[in-house]
Length: 446
Image 1: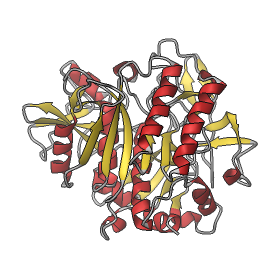
Image 2: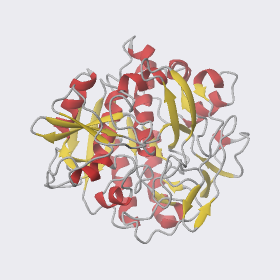
Image 3: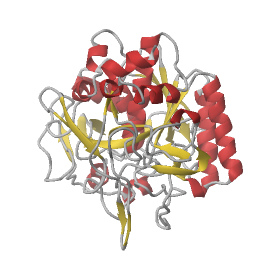
Image 4: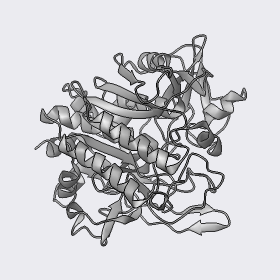
């Protein structure tokens, strides 16, 4: 996430609050230096990192799309034509009004650089301004670029439909619910999967607001559209209620919409894979010290809902009590181990940036579901029951990487919010774990 995000920063104030974190190199670059970015004179020729950093910052320290596909078992499916063709993944994003690279770039140029650098086919990008009349279709802030490039990396033949929202859409909790509800209701028209890297702590919203969003999610399930949302980047504390983090008072809770039982909630890990072949090596829960204390970018969001009782599909799962447990699944969310992004800076120059937060895992899982839909020959829709059946089955360890180390404790000095520990099976940090898509997708498609 990064915020307003329950997994994503949709506004420059959020990114500024998370300076030095995932994609924070963009902010540093605005001042003329970027410790978290490598700049190339043209796509395809990465230069050396501009300075030392704990984050991945180049093609040799970040993972390439190909390496991510190998690590998570996606490449064997891609080799047999499972590439997302025939699918549409829907992504909401805030509209931008002024080009200011690399903070605000041209998404078409970003994708052209990304495709050339990683030898991907041209992206099938669509942008709707219906909810943001008069907005520029092609201006993109970092969150939009992350979402689009992540989906394109995992499902390169899928269509990507960006729904632009007014810049003020997230200024209040009520506005956030309206934006999310509108996104879902628009997304189910012509979309197959919806990815939401956004949200706020459950206490932020009234019962009526929660019910309004839930009704839209029921409509999505009825249309066999899968909705994925990031679980948050503040561990056992809910995400801030609005785009302003200055008045953020952490509360131990989970974030909405990830906590809604009709949503696939995506948490975070820190991946270790070969930078030569992409071969999977190990994984731990994403949390400190790979986050920044006091910020809204610290650890995989997770815990128990105060709004929703335990859904039937979570029944009998050790570690889940009487309430909805979050997250359901996870994938790499650490800015230290993220996928490389390409951001155009104009004049033929491209920056390589790190990705991170559960705002990276939501579009990752959305793209993965697009692959599963293609494999099955139809939209799988609400897949949580199927995922939990696999998690409780003897095939669990073939279909998932079970994450058993790490925790999601966070620090907002002087207070520490003790988190949960990853453990065998489902846990409130990484859910069932990360996918081995080569085995998981055929099981989901049955």
